[in-house]
Image (cartoon, rainbow, N blue to C red):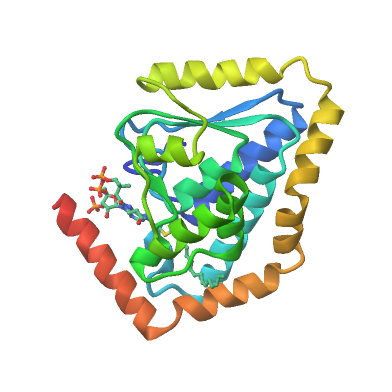
Length: 239
Ligand SMILES: CC/C=C\C/C=C\C/C=C\CC/C=C/CC(=O)SCCNC(=O)CCNC(=O)[C@H](O)C(C)(C)COP(=O)(O)OP(=O)(O)OC[C@H]1O[C@@H](n2cnc3c(N)ncnc32)[C@H](O)[C@@H]1OP(=O)(O)O
């Protein structure tokens, strides 16, 4: 990902990611490392400005593009690793959770923090967390909107490994891909999709309902007010 300053996911960036995933699949890619050009941020999650006073059709398109990108990422036939050498809140955490393996560096925060922002992580975000860390830990983390530090993320199983820095992180991600290289492709892909099928199907069969929930939620005046205040707090921080 290379969308400075924080790889926030707007419609255009989501479309770029989706196109890249389609191309990798068409080219029979043997593995992907999802990484960031930023030295300190993996991805800041959804671009909050897409949800602030949006036009209705633009908001719908934004959400559908996010769904498209995630459905592709979660179901890739090739192995995927997230090299998390920077913070990964909310949608950034979703990207990492959607890969098959996660390597993180020290001093990083990762989690689905939506509750803390007064919004609700959609069901499929929640499912991804549950699938990785289990029901009990996911429930606790989601209710609190907890951001895990590196050590906590490793302890709870949110990530698989800690590496010293970006170079080591990429090297460990490559090692994971190498460990998968000799597995028969069809068998590997079939097992992966078997594990992920119920989560994928839940969104695929409920896409319109999911979009409707998103639209109804973010268009509420009190939610808009919360988004406005959050945006102000973010830009005050950097200003
Ligand atoms: C069962 C379900 C039922 C119901 C569900 C119902 C509805 C669902 C509805 C909605 C769901 C919506 C889901 C949303 C998921 C998301 O991903 S929301 C996004 C959450 N992201 C965050 O909270 C991260 C915020 N950012 C940060 O914490 C920090 O920026 C970060 C730690 C990533 C980096 O810190 P730092 O390097 O210090 O950078 P700055 O904070 O200084 O930021 C630099 C500039 O970037 C701007 N920015 C940061 N994050 C975002 C963002 N996510 N979107 C847009 N812009 C962002 C920031 O304002 C600075 O801009 P400026 O320089 O001031 O112009």
